[in-house]
Length: 339
Image 1: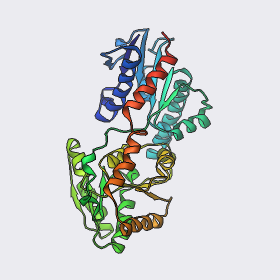
Image 2: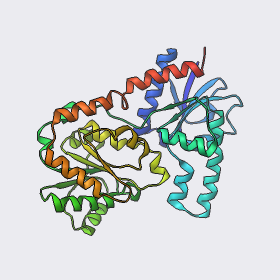
Image 3: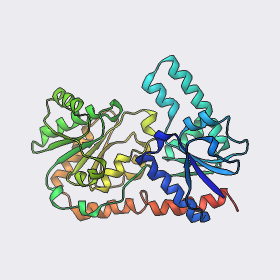
Image 4: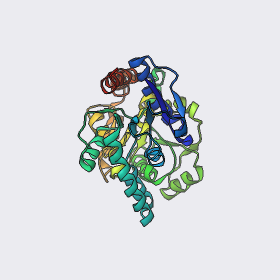
């Protein structure tokens, strides 16, 4: 068997590379195939190649050039048509979305194996395209292993909050700062740090809420160490389909560094997976009063670093376990590509 990764050059980035590497390692475990090449043109694809494709744009661009019986694995990262309409909303966006809708249907019919980042995403396609096959794997977005050195007693002594990311509207930074302002009223000793390259935009939002915070940029390779300094991390989202089916990598980053996530329950799989945990803060839709009460309760009761570590270790032994996914994917690969 010969596997290749067919990419657009701009897709060959850190975030996607980790996900692809998991799939490649599973292929090696299943079939002993190593040195799986990345290619950027169908001219480098043979008829008997099994392709790994991670975006509908690649299918749309190359569909007419792929061989009629070409086998491929596809990774659905999210709902591209709905995202296009949400971001742009004009007639051109709706036409483009309609094209991607047809591309989705093609992929769901033709791919030998499909990856979804969430169960909610699979359910979406079951409803939208009547997808009802069992040729799928569900694997959330993650890029870090747990760093046990971050779970120190000192970091949990004070109510320190962090937001890490850009200032895009869909990241709900405005809402995060607004919630922090309410926290600050109840916990005057609370402080906020914003880790972003968009520092001017951050200052504007802080000024709007009359909140002081430290703003700084931390390179990706130093982000894990920096995150280990904070007790709580904001991960708020609006209640729209794009967010309902997502599994933001930020949750993995926070928990890997022992940061207690303050997240919206509209992120469907996260609500299902994490709701039984003690050391999380879940925000209800359009109402953050409940999350404020949860934070006040945590501050009143105190936090034991060992308890947080044991609880999060359980998540990294299951939901965020790279080796577990590699083994599961390898078994699925042998099922869909019998030798």
